Length: 403
Image (cartoon, rainbow, N blue to C red):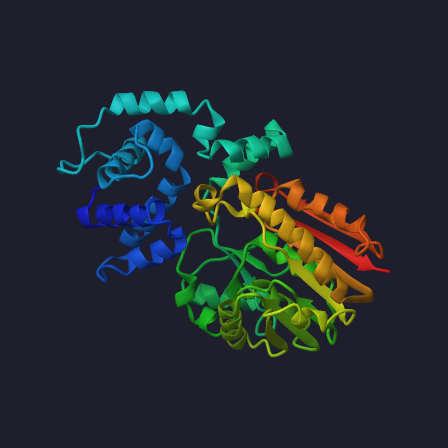
């Protein structure tokens, strides 16, 4: 493989923004890819994949390169040289690349690969937390899977098309997709492609959404004509799915504390042809208190550590601090108690997270059921989804019914 200086420099620039400036990897990759319009698909693929892989394995590469945070530019080149040697790429003769002892790199890699926290590149506290929560074997399997790049999964927008018609449309545009057994609306891309450039996307025939995430709206068991409230809607992936399942009939109230995310949801809803969505920014407790006792269905897609989606957001393991778990579990505790009051008698609620930690999941639900606010609810079913078992994102979801 011939290395081009401008591509490697783009990778180094991106890593500097992520590791030293604290910027988010997905935003940095988008920004870096706009630096040179002449880059083709292969060049762009090299930049994005190299940045993400180096973010995933930051701890391992830094340990082998013997560099520490904050990384100087020279340190980032040293880490990149480690990555290149381990990939079997011949190092170029550039002044930024120091003489690199390849045998020592490979020897150190073999040695560190025997230790899970280095092999899978996680901070000590996350490794200890995961092992304690899930046990040695499951945590080891899960971490390995969470370090593999996520596949591109589409969710068919049934308001506009069917899975088979979408498959045909994409094939006509040169993109091959295949159905996934057990997932009603999901299609998988065997090979990565920029699906956002397709006419099918522009016409609102699909959204990109992981297969595990697609199970959340389905679990809520919505019906056409109901009043449904999505309490932590964000940019609305699950709201759009709910609108499709409701066949655009009834009222879907999508709420969030961030107005900017709801603006994005409105834009996506227009493309999707989802007309029954009404957005409400939670500017005060009055916004949701007005809805108490009025909804047939309530979705609480709670904020969480995101440990189940590290494949997509590998930089989050470096940004997260140990005290965040305490803060987020307190937030979850309060949210489920407040928003559950929106469910009317005989109604149903789903509590979901993209975490794999019992503290954020089944323990939160059990604590709620033991509380005053949860005494009228019963657990109908729950799903614990692990990436190592399903092949998709780690998720938790519980369906509860108000008696």
